[in-house]
Length: 239
Ligand code: MF3
Ligand code: CO
Ligand code: CO
Image (cartoon, rainbow, N blue to C red):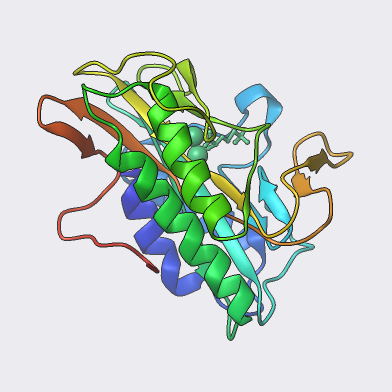
């Protein structure tokens, strides 16, 4: 359901649309499909999705005041509650023509998420996931945000364990069949440090350079993992 929202909204992500309208479309689609937007009123968050543009790392609040502009890169993060369980995913979209550096950042962010997902097997530990993401990202000259992390997910939106996107091999919680958690690295063009704006939600890069993020909800299986927020036949978006 969450993945379907990311597909549905794609055609609306165009120059001139406000993030308020993107939120309204997603909200209506989620309700129409018998689900609830998990983010709405979550610890006071006022909207149903997060829209994070350019230097915004995560938790951007949809508003009538912000309209998408040519060259913007934007993350839409959707979490829904359906049949008692939450699903959480996000992806980047591009508006008009973006810079080569922005394109590279998006491609590295998506690949970094998959480097982490590859490590999600019953033989691994959480540190293996963090290590794979950090090693790939830093090898490409970008940085991994430390202050926001992936999380267990299920009957609650955010559960144990914390899923750090940096780490050391062979450390941390051992993965087991049946575990469900997100992998959602935030990758910065410059420094990994962030600021939280006065609205209490919007997280931006300290140097105001670009940031990109992708997120999937993962199930650990005997064979390795299943990506629960991947639709049948779906492939990567950029890399
Ligand atoms: N979907 C975000 C995550 O990946 C959390 C958003 S919480 C909100 O964990 F309140 F900002 F919506
Ligand atoms: Co999440
Ligand atoms: Co999310």
